[in-house]
Image (cartoon, rainbow, N blue to C red; front, side):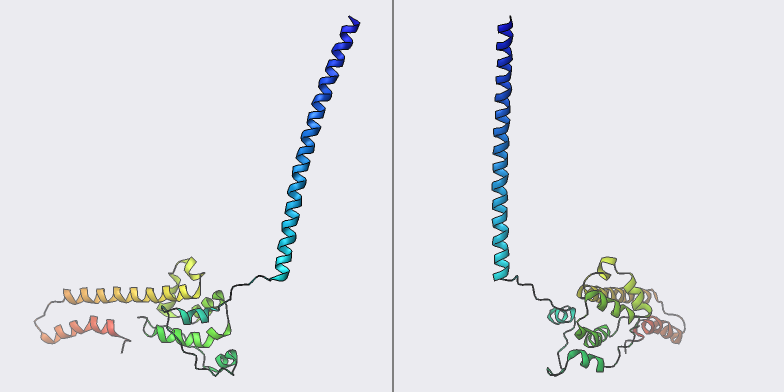
Amino acid sequence: MAEQSIDEEMEVRTLIEADESKRIADLREQVAGLTQQLRELTQKQASEREQLVNEPPKLPEWKSPWRRCQCDNSLPHVKNRVNNTVNPAFAAMALPDVPVYDYAQGKGFDEFLTSFLMKCGSLNLDDVMLIHSLCSKLGGQPRAVMETLPQDVREGTFEGFASALMAKFKENESARRMEAYIKLKKLTPSTNITEYCVELEQPLEKHTRGID
């Protein structure tokens, strides 16, 4: 019985040692794999650092909203009439201040935007500052129209903001024309031809006020 017990104990020890040997072999294999991955990663990083030293990354050319506006057909194109030897910033400072734009019908917005870009566009301001400066020059109904634009438009690019504002002015103008046309169609001749002419002129005068 004692001899059998010793044999069983030896068998158990042999199984335990074999299991430990297998686990050690598995761990060594895992360590070898991780070491190889670390070596490859180190070589890759060294190669990337060497490439950056030899060839610095080329950053995309930054264009100010002013330069982008000149290339965008949706906005008025302003020709550069400033002498190339003069700093554009000083030339812009010499221009008169842009007056507040408050035309109810959106009349002359193209000219206003051109004057604004000539004054502020060459200062290399970012989109946020340009939009803020343009909003500060809007008054009356144009400012109310501006406040109806979606927030993502008001916080987006200057080109998108200006284009959306122009589209909104045209949309309101079409609505006013339709309103004047409907009022005109509803007019009926009165017994007094003079009174009828006065009634006929009222919607037309209201619609065309400020256009001439």
